[in-house]
Image (cartoon, rainbow, N blue to C red; front, side, top):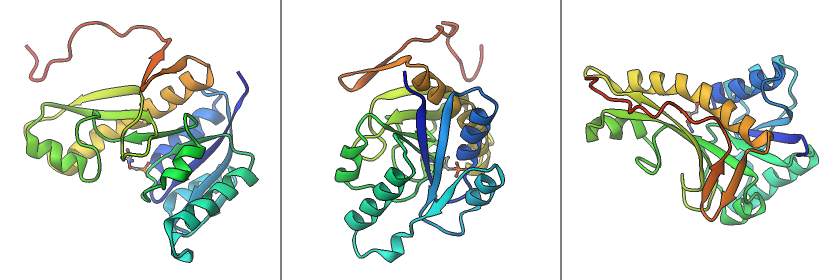
Length: 216
Ligand code: GRF
């Protein structure tokens, strides 16, 4: 399998982008990060990417009158950088179906819930309101409908009795930083096959014991 040439799209903090950059620079994931692209010039993540020696660029959505024109500019920036695979990492703009089509099966996203539960915004608040006892995160291929697409990998964490939104977000984020590099590594190693709208992943099986919360 050819080495992935990655573009990572961010809008803010960029901690998942950092996890991907670190995994690539340590050789844990064999991929070449060509560009970190943000729609916000002030995104904190850009500073870290630059200090790690990764090329960065900003395409501001405010410079375009419509989403299709903004997405076309994103696409051009990715192509100019030689990107052939895109990771969305806290990219807070909705992408047009045209853009998503161009990157069909070549674009993945991380979402802070166990999809298909709680797609969209305010996931942790909604998970707490629903009273779920396990939450987590999901890495999936991107399809036109928000937070849908073949699931590559998931991580589960317990929801604890006194959790506030920030506590659950922090616990899930730790899981995100392990899961995203893992999912990318599986793809880079050619271990993920898409069949219909599901994936078949060649990887060691986890322990089959259930994760109970509360434990018995
Ligand atoms: C993460 O929780 C990610 O799952 C969601 O947006 C957040 C981005 O955080 N899509 P960061 O910018 O990667 O720190």
